[in-house]
Length: 142
Image (cartoon, rainbow, N blue to C red; front, top):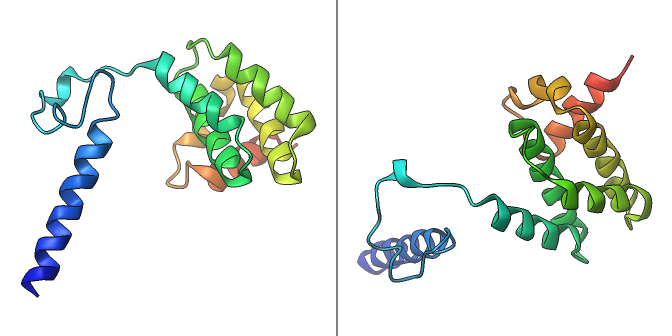
C-alpha cells in the first residue's frame, strides 16, 4: 500500500511538472518553482504553431481533436489572426482523408467565417469535440 501511494504521488508530480514545463519560457527545473497564476500569458504564436502541426498529422484522431480546439479557439478569440490555421482547415475540408475530418473541417470553416454567430455553441457543458460540432451543426440547420 505504501509503495502504491508513493508511486501515485511520484507519477502525479512528474505529470504536473512536465505539463507546466510546456508553458512558454519554462523548463522542467523552472516548472517546480512557479510564479502566481495571474502572471500567465497565453503565447498564441506557439499555440498556433502546435495546432498547425496537429492539423498536418497522419493520425485522424489528432486532426479531429485539433479541429475541435481551433474551432473553440476561434469562437473564444474572434479577433485573433488565425489565417494559417484557416488555410489548413480549408484544405482539410476538401482533402481530409476521412469523411469525419472533412465534415468537421467544413463546420469549422463556417465558424471561422462568422465566429460571433456560434458563441452560444461553447456555452454548453459539451463544448468540446463532437459536442461542439453537434452544436454548430444545429445552429446551421434551417
